[in-house]
Amino acid sequence: MKLRIAMFGLLLSCAGFASENKIDTLTQWQAEVANTEFSGVIIAAQNGQVVFRDQYGYANREAKRLFTHDTVFDIGSITKQFVGTAITQLAEQNKLQLDSSLEVFFEQVPEDKKHITVHHLLTHNSGLSQNLEHYLYDEVTKRDMIKQALTSKLNTSPGEQYRYSNIGYNLLGAIIEKVTGDEWEKYIRTTLLLPAGLENTGFRGVSYQPISLAINYGRDANFIQRMFSITPKTRSVDHSLAHYYKKPGPRWAMEGAGSFMSNTNDMFKWYLALREGKLISAKSWQLITSKHIHENDALTSHYGYGWAIDSNSRGDKRITYNGSNGYSFAVFNYYPELDGFVFIGSNNIDDFPEQLMAKLDELVITPVIN
Image (cartoon, rainbow, N blue to C red):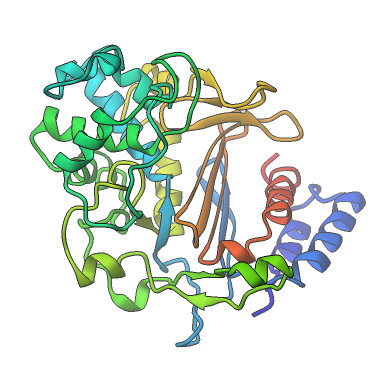
Protein backbone atom coordinates (compact mmCIF):
# COMPACT_ATOMS: atom_id res chain seq x y z
CA MET A 1 0.00 0.00 0.00
CA LYS A 2 1.34 3.44 -0.91
CA LEU A 3 2.12 5.76 1.96
CA ARG A 4 -0.83 7.95 2.83
CA ILE A 5 0.12 11.54 3.62
CA ALA A 6 -1.91 13.57 6.10
CA MET A 7 0.84 15.74 7.50
CA PHE A 8 0.77 18.40 4.80
CA GLY A 9 -2.62 19.79 5.74
CA LEU A 10 -1.79 19.67 9.41
CA LEU A 11 1.39 21.65 8.99
CA LEU A 12 -0.40 24.27 6.93
CA SER A 13 -2.99 24.60 9.67
CA CYS A 14 -0.30 25.54 12.20
CA ALA A 15 -0.54 29.30 11.70
CA GLY A 16 2.71 31.04 10.96
CA PHE A 17 4.83 27.91 11.11
CA ALA A 18 5.03 26.77 7.49
CA SER A 19 7.00 29.05 5.18
CA GLU A 20 6.89 28.64 1.41
CA ASN A 21 10.27 26.93 1.51
CA LYS A 22 9.03 24.46 4.07
CA ILE A 23 5.90 23.80 2.03
CA ASP A 24 8.08 23.12 -1.01
CA THR A 25 10.21 20.74 1.04
CA LEU A 26 7.12 18.95 2.30
CA THR A 27 5.76 18.65 -1.22
CA GLN A 28 9.03 17.10 -2.34
CA TRP A 29 9.00 14.75 0.64
CA GLN A 30 5.45 13.71 -0.21
CA ALA A 31 6.44 12.90 -3.78
CA GLU A 32 9.41 10.81 -2.65
CA VAL A 33 7.64 8.89 0.06
CA ALA A 34 4.56 8.23 -2.11
CA ASN A 35 6.76 5.85 -4.08
CA THR A 36 7.62 3.74 -1.05
CA GLU A 37 5.81 0.79 0.48
CA PHE A 38 6.14 2.05 4.04
CA SER A 39 3.72 0.57 6.54
CA GLY A 40 3.67 1.77 10.11
CA VAL A 41 2.84 4.59 12.48
CA ILE A 42 4.06 8.09 13.26
CA ILE A 43 3.31 10.33 16.22
CA ALA A 44 4.74 13.73 17.16
CA ALA A 45 4.12 15.86 20.23
CA GLN A 46 5.18 19.11 21.85
CA ASN A 47 4.64 20.39 25.37
CA GLY A 48 2.83 17.19 26.24
CA GLN A 49 0.28 17.54 23.43
CA VAL A 50 0.01 15.47 20.25
CA VAL A 51 0.56 17.66 17.19
CA PHE A 52 0.55 14.89 14.60
CA ARG A 53 -0.54 11.28 14.56
CA ASP A 54 -1.16 8.98 11.61
CA GLN A 55 -0.87 5.40 10.44
CA TYR A 56 0.01 3.89 7.08
CA GLY A 57 -0.38 0.60 5.31
CA TYR A 58 -1.06 -2.87 6.61
CA ALA A 59 -0.20 -4.37 9.98
CA ASN A 60 -1.29 -7.68 8.45
CA ARG A 61 -1.20 -7.80 4.65
CA GLU A 62 -2.76 -11.25 4.36
CA ALA A 63 -5.77 -10.26 6.47
CA LYS A 64 -5.86 -6.73 4.96
CA ARG A 65 -5.68 -5.37 8.51
CA LEU A 66 -4.57 -1.75 8.58
CA PHE A 67 -2.20 -0.21 11.08
CA THR A 68 -3.80 1.73 13.94
CA HIS A 69 -2.29 3.38 16.99
CA ASP A 70 -3.45 0.40 19.02
CA THR A 71 -1.40 -1.95 16.82
CA VAL A 72 1.34 -3.63 18.84
CA PHE A 73 4.74 -4.23 17.27
CA ASP A 74 8.31 -5.08 18.22
CA ILE A 75 10.35 -2.10 19.47
CA GLY A 76 13.59 -4.08 19.73
CA SER A 77 16.44 -2.35 21.54
CA ILE A 78 14.22 0.50 22.71
CA THR A 79 13.72 -2.03 25.52
CA LYS A 80 17.17 -0.96 26.75
CA GLN A 81 15.93 2.45 27.89
CA PHE A 82 13.53 0.76 30.30
CA VAL A 83 16.33 -1.47 31.61
CA GLY A 84 18.70 1.49 31.95
CA THR A 85 16.04 3.45 33.83
CA ALA A 86 15.29 0.51 36.13
CA ILE A 87 18.97 0.01 36.99
CA THR A 88 19.42 3.73 37.68
CA GLN A 89 16.28 3.72 39.81
CA LEU A 90 17.70 0.84 41.87
CA ALA A 91 20.94 2.78 42.29
CA GLU A 92 18.94 5.82 43.40
CA GLN A 93 17.34 3.61 46.05
CA ASN A 94 20.79 2.34 47.15
CA LYS A 95 19.86 -1.21 46.17
CA LEU A 96 22.92 -1.48 43.94
CA GLN A 97 26.00 0.55 43.08
CA LEU A 98 26.80 1.53 39.51
CA ASP A 99 30.50 0.90 40.12
CA SER A 100 29.90 -2.60 41.49
CA SER A 101 31.68 -5.35 39.59
CA LEU A 102 30.15 -8.52 38.21
CA GLU A 103 31.48 -10.42 41.23
CA VAL A 104 28.83 -8.75 43.38
CA PHE A 105 26.05 -10.40 41.38
CA PHE A 106 27.49 -13.58 39.85
CA GLU A 107 29.59 -16.49 41.03
CA GLN A 108 32.84 -17.73 39.51
CA VAL A 109 33.56 -14.59 37.50
CA PRO A 110 36.82 -15.18 35.59
CA GLU A 111 39.79 -12.88 36.10
CA ASP A 112 39.39 -10.99 32.82
CA LYS A 113 35.83 -9.96 33.74
CA LYS A 114 36.28 -9.08 37.40
CA HIS A 115 36.70 -5.41 36.55
CA ILE A 116 33.48 -5.13 34.50
CA THR A 117 31.04 -2.88 36.35
CA VAL A 118 27.34 -2.11 36.07
CA HIS A 119 28.33 1.21 34.50
CA HIS A 120 30.34 -0.63 31.84
CA LEU A 121 27.34 -2.80 30.99
CA LEU A 122 25.02 0.21 30.75
CA THR A 123 27.36 2.09 28.41
CA HIS A 124 28.45 -0.80 26.13
CA ASN A 125 31.94 -0.36 27.49
CA SER A 126 32.48 -3.80 28.99
CA GLY A 127 34.35 -5.45 26.14
CA LEU A 128 31.73 -8.20 25.89
CA SER A 129 30.65 -9.47 22.47
CA GLN A 130 27.50 -8.19 20.81
CA ASN A 131 25.38 -11.35 20.97
CA LEU A 132 25.24 -14.84 22.40
CA GLU A 133 25.83 -17.76 20.05
CA HIS A 134 22.10 -18.18 19.61
CA TYR A 135 19.37 -16.96 17.30
CA LEU A 136 17.39 -14.09 18.80
CA TYR A 137 14.33 -16.20 19.61
CA ASP A 138 16.07 -19.41 20.69
CA GLU A 139 15.11 -20.86 24.05
CA VAL A 140 18.03 -19.96 26.33
CA THR A 141 18.02 -20.16 30.12
CA LYS A 142 19.40 -17.42 32.32
CA ARG A 143 22.04 -19.82 33.64
CA ASP A 144 23.23 -20.63 30.12
CA MET A 145 23.30 -16.94 29.21
CA ILE A 146 25.41 -16.08 32.25
CA LYS A 147 27.76 -18.99 31.59
CA GLN A 148 28.26 -17.96 27.96
CA ALA A 149 28.75 -14.31 28.92
CA LEU A 150 31.35 -15.10 31.57
CA THR A 151 33.29 -17.63 29.50
CA SER A 152 33.29 -15.69 26.22
CA LYS A 153 36.38 -13.89 25.02
CA LEU A 154 36.43 -10.12 25.55
CA ASN A 155 36.83 -7.91 22.49
CA THR A 156 38.51 -5.15 24.51
CA SER A 157 39.47 -4.55 28.11
CA PRO A 158 36.66 -3.23 30.34
CA GLY A 159 36.34 0.53 30.11
CA GLU A 160 38.58 0.78 27.05
CA GLN A 161 36.21 1.27 24.12
CA TYR A 162 32.54 1.51 23.11
CA ARG A 163 31.47 -1.84 21.63
CA TYR A 164 27.73 -2.42 21.38
CA SER A 165 26.78 -5.45 23.45
CA ASN A 166 23.37 -7.04 23.83
CA ILE A 167 25.03 -9.50 26.21
CA GLY A 168 25.73 -6.59 28.56
CA TYR A 169 22.02 -5.82 28.73
CA ASN A 170 21.18 -9.53 29.09
CA LEU A 171 23.33 -9.41 32.22
CA LEU A 172 21.61 -6.23 33.42
CA GLY A 173 18.29 -8.05 33.21
CA ALA A 174 19.77 -10.80 35.37
CA ILE A 175 21.14 -8.20 37.82
CA ILE A 176 17.65 -6.71 38.21
CA GLU A 177 16.40 -10.18 39.12
CA LYS A 178 19.27 -10.75 41.56
CA VAL A 179 18.73 -7.43 43.35
CA THR A 180 14.92 -7.39 43.43
CA GLY A 181 14.09 -11.08 43.66
CA ASP A 182 11.59 -10.55 40.87
CA GLU A 183 11.55 -11.30 37.14
CA TRP A 184 13.15 -8.40 35.30
CA GLU A 185 10.12 -7.70 33.12
CA LYS A 186 7.71 -7.93 36.05
CA TYR A 187 9.83 -5.50 38.04
CA ILE A 188 9.95 -3.01 35.17
CA ARG A 189 6.23 -3.39 34.57
CA THR A 190 5.44 -2.76 38.25
CA THR A 191 7.81 0.15 38.85
CA LEU A 192 7.95 1.90 35.47
CA LEU A 193 5.38 0.81 32.91
CA LEU A 194 2.15 0.73 34.91
CA PRO A 195 2.92 3.90 36.93
CA ALA A 196 3.45 5.68 33.60
CA GLY A 197 0.24 4.21 32.15
CA LEU A 198 1.94 1.87 29.67
CA GLU A 199 -0.49 -1.05 29.59
CA ASN A 200 0.51 -2.50 26.20
CA THR A 201 4.28 -2.57 26.58
CA GLY A 202 6.18 -5.70 27.53
CA PHE A 203 6.87 -9.28 26.57
CA ARG A 204 5.29 -11.91 28.82
CA GLY A 205 3.43 -9.52 31.08
CA VAL A 206 0.74 -8.46 28.61
CA SER A 207 -2.06 -10.62 27.22
CA TYR A 208 -2.21 -9.31 23.68
CA GLN A 209 -5.15 -9.95 21.41
CA PRO A 210 -3.83 -11.64 18.24
CA ILE A 211 -5.72 -9.11 16.13
CA SER A 212 -3.65 -6.29 17.65
CA LEU A 213 -0.24 -7.74 16.72
CA ALA A 214 1.58 -6.52 13.62
CA ILE A 215 3.02 -9.19 11.34
CA ASN A 216 6.72 -8.77 10.52
CA TYR A 217 7.81 -8.85 6.90
CA GLY A 218 11.25 -9.34 5.44
CA ARG A 219 13.28 -10.20 2.39
CA ASP A 220 15.79 -13.01 2.51
CA ALA A 221 18.17 -12.71 -0.42
CA ASN A 222 19.86 -15.94 -1.49
CA PHE A 223 23.27 -16.23 -3.13
CA ILE A 224 21.98 -15.95 -6.71
CA GLN A 225 19.80 -12.96 -5.87
CA ARG A 226 22.73 -11.17 -4.25
CA MET A 227 25.06 -12.02 -7.16
CA PHE A 228 22.70 -10.62 -9.78
CA SER A 229 21.23 -7.84 -7.60
CA ILE A 230 17.76 -9.36 -7.78
CA THR A 231 15.38 -7.94 -5.22
CA PRO A 232 13.87 -10.86 -3.29
CA LYS A 233 10.16 -11.03 -2.66
CA THR A 234 8.84 -9.97 0.71
CA ARG A 235 7.66 -12.79 2.94
CA SER A 236 5.68 -12.90 6.16
CA VAL A 237 7.65 -13.90 9.25
CA ASP A 238 4.71 -13.77 11.70
CA HIS A 239 4.53 -11.48 14.71
CA SER A 240 7.38 -11.25 17.22
CA LEU A 241 5.66 -13.27 19.94
CA ALA A 242 4.80 -16.26 17.73
CA HIS A 243 7.89 -18.17 18.88
CA TYR A 244 6.95 -17.67 22.53
CA TYR A 245 3.28 -18.52 22.09
CA LYS A 246 4.22 -21.74 20.30
CA LYS A 247 6.87 -22.71 22.86
CA PRO A 248 6.86 -20.72 26.10
CA GLY A 249 10.18 -20.57 27.91
CA PRO A 250 13.17 -18.35 28.67
CA ARG A 251 14.60 -16.27 25.84
CA TRP A 252 17.78 -14.93 27.40
CA ALA A 253 19.44 -14.30 24.04
CA MET A 254 17.29 -11.18 23.95
CA GLU A 255 15.87 -10.66 27.46
CA GLY A 256 17.02 -7.37 28.94
CA ALA A 257 18.40 -6.31 25.56
CA GLY A 258 15.22 -6.41 23.45
CA SER A 259 11.95 -8.33 23.27
CA PHE A 260 9.50 -5.59 24.28
CA MET A 261 6.36 -4.96 22.27
CA SER A 262 4.51 -1.65 22.35
CA ASN A 263 2.35 0.79 20.39
CA THR A 264 2.38 4.52 19.71
CA ASN A 265 -0.11 5.28 22.45
CA ASP A 266 2.25 3.81 25.04
CA MET A 267 5.31 5.47 23.53
CA PHE A 268 3.55 8.82 23.87
CA LYS A 269 2.81 8.04 27.53
CA TRP A 270 6.48 7.15 28.05
CA TYR A 271 7.47 10.56 26.66
CA LEU A 272 5.01 12.19 29.08
CA ALA A 273 6.49 10.29 32.03
CA LEU A 274 10.01 11.33 31.07
CA ARG A 275 9.23 15.02 30.61
CA GLU A 276 7.24 15.18 33.84
CA GLY A 277 9.87 13.39 35.95
CA LYS A 278 7.33 10.89 37.25
CA LEU A 279 9.59 7.91 37.75
CA ILE A 280 13.07 9.03 38.77
CA SER A 281 14.75 12.11 40.17
CA ALA A 282 16.15 14.89 38.00
CA LYS A 283 19.63 13.84 39.15
CA SER A 284 19.10 10.29 37.92
CA TRP A 285 17.63 11.47 34.61
CA GLN A 286 20.72 13.64 34.16
CA LEU A 287 22.87 10.56 34.79
CA ILE A 288 20.89 8.47 32.30
CA THR A 289 21.21 11.08 29.55
CA SER A 290 24.82 12.11 30.20
CA LYS A 291 27.37 11.60 27.43
CA HIS A 292 29.27 8.80 29.13
CA ILE A 293 31.08 7.52 26.05
CA HIS A 294 31.27 8.45 22.37
CA GLU A 295 29.74 6.04 19.88
CA ASN A 296 31.76 7.15 16.85
CA ASP A 297 35.14 8.65 16.01
CA ALA A 298 33.50 11.87 14.85
CA LEU A 299 32.20 12.39 18.41
CA THR A 300 28.77 13.31 17.02
CA SER A 301 26.89 10.68 19.03
CA HIS A 302 27.33 9.57 22.61
CA TYR A 303 25.83 6.88 24.80
CA GLY A 304 24.11 7.28 28.14
CA TYR A 305 22.28 4.56 30.03
CA GLY A 306 20.08 2.91 27.40
CA TRP A 307 19.92 6.07 25.30
CA ALA A 308 22.00 7.72 22.60
CA ILE A 309 22.57 11.47 22.79
CA ASP A 310 23.20 13.45 19.61
CA SER A 311 21.85 16.44 17.68
CA ASN A 312 19.77 16.83 14.56
CA SER A 313 20.96 18.82 11.56
CA ARG A 314 19.77 22.06 13.19
CA GLY A 315 21.79 21.39 16.31
CA ASP A 316 18.82 20.55 18.54
CA LYS A 317 19.81 18.14 21.31
CA ARG A 318 18.22 14.76 20.72
CA ILE A 319 17.88 11.89 23.17
CA THR A 320 17.16 8.97 20.92
CA TYR A 321 17.10 5.24 20.40
CA ASN A 322 16.03 2.83 17.73
CA GLY A 323 15.34 -0.85 17.71
CA SER A 324 14.92 -3.69 15.26
CA ASN A 325 14.60 -7.46 15.28
CA GLY A 326 15.84 -7.60 11.70
CA TYR A 327 12.32 -7.16 10.32
CA SER A 328 10.50 -4.45 12.25
CA PHE A 329 12.00 -1.05 13.02
CA ALA A 330 11.20 1.70 15.52
CA VAL A 331 12.82 4.98 16.51
CA PHE A 332 12.09 7.17 19.55
CA ASN A 333 13.34 10.78 19.42
CA TYR A 334 13.00 13.14 22.38
CA TYR A 335 14.04 16.80 22.10
CA PRO A 336 14.27 18.06 25.71
CA GLU A 337 15.12 21.66 24.82
CA LEU A 338 12.07 21.85 22.54
CA ASP A 339 9.94 19.54 24.68
CA GLY A 340 9.36 17.66 21.44
CA PHE A 341 8.83 14.00 20.69
CA VAL A 342 8.71 11.97 17.48
CA PHE A 343 8.15 8.22 17.26
CA ILE A 344 8.12 6.19 14.06
CA GLY A 345 7.54 2.45 13.79
CA SER A 346 7.30 -0.02 10.92
CA ASN A 347 6.75 -3.75 10.53
CA ASN A 348 9.08 -4.02 7.53
CA ILE A 349 12.60 -2.64 7.78
CA ASP A 350 13.19 -3.47 4.09
CA ASP A 351 10.48 -1.01 3.10
CA PHE A 352 11.41 1.53 5.77
CA PRO A 353 12.72 4.59 3.88
CA GLU A 354 15.18 5.57 6.61
CA GLN A 355 16.56 8.69 4.95
CA LEU A 356 13.07 9.92 4.11
CA MET A 357 11.89 9.27 7.64
CA ALA A 358 14.89 11.15 9.03
CA LYS A 359 13.85 14.02 6.81
CA LEU A 360 10.31 13.72 8.11
CA ASP A 361 11.62 13.94 11.67
CA GLU A 362 13.35 17.19 10.74
CA LEU A 363 10.23 18.52 9.02
CA VAL A 364 8.07 17.78 12.04
CA ILE A 365 10.53 19.45 14.38
CA THR A 366 11.04 22.56 12.24
CA PRO A 367 7.52 23.79 11.45
CA VAL A 368 5.53 22.16 14.24
CA ILE A 369 7.65 21.64 17.33
CA ASN A 370 9.48 24.93 17.23
